[in-house]
Amino acid sequence: MSTSNLKVKRLLLTGAAGGLGKVLRERLRPFADVIRVSDLAAPAAAEGPHEEVVVCDLADKAAVDALVAGCDAIVHLGGVSVERPFEEILEANIKGVFHLYEAARRHGCKRIVFASSNHVIGFYRQTEHIDATAAKRPDGNYGLSKAFGEDVAQFYYDRYGIETVSIRIGSSFPEPLNRRMMSSWLSYRDLTNLVEKCLFTPDVKHTIVYGMSANRDVWWDNSAAARLGFVPQDSSEPFRAKVEAQPPVAADDPNAIYQGGAFTAQGPFE
Image (cartoon, rainbow, N blue to C red; front, side, top):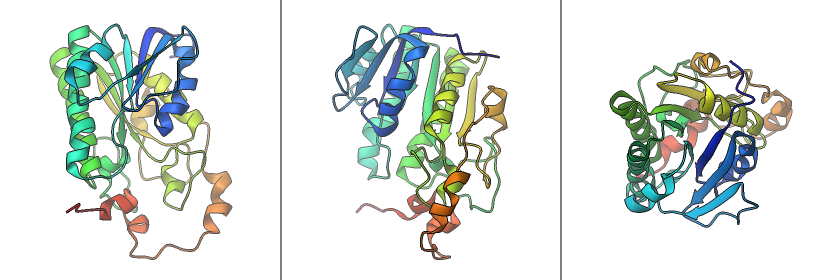
């Protein structure tokens, strides 16, 4: 199904002041009449009537309820995006995702794109090939929070009919930064196209997909994304020589063993 001409009236983008939020704020404009952008830190000022800027703490239930009001769809990037002590993860990533879905239920918002993470399955080894149905193996507090978010998405579909595509984002940067990212890299162009498919493909229920480009050596079967019509256009291969010029990674380095890389060794935070 082509989704190129589809649009919603008001699209909420949380985490708009973060790295990927800044990327998608610009790139999601064709998909909505109005984009409401939000973050705990103030995003850049609205550039015109097509944008609304709202500062919001995801841990504040009432504030999130007001944030979601009037929105037809949500791209949820908001939250702590690195491994941190549980108390920090709890507020934005666990309370926050619950508040978001509760607000969506109350206001009748029926489509959410949830930025999950490869760290939900980070303790699989790089020698293993898995699909989206594989048992979760989170690699830290951050991965646990994203696993919780996926479970919340499933629950809110089963009970309330709110459809979600959870994207287990690999490594989305302008280019892969190391050998591990040669497998997990997701270009900004492919990220944008995948989010578009997640927003507009009908009858997704709760679908889990992997966010990765058409890389040569991959750990993930992304058949679920293909069923959404996602065909990645980019690959990490043009960066191979640059990455492989880096010093070799030790054989016992988590970046050489686990799909979650260094996240598997961070903490405890005592």
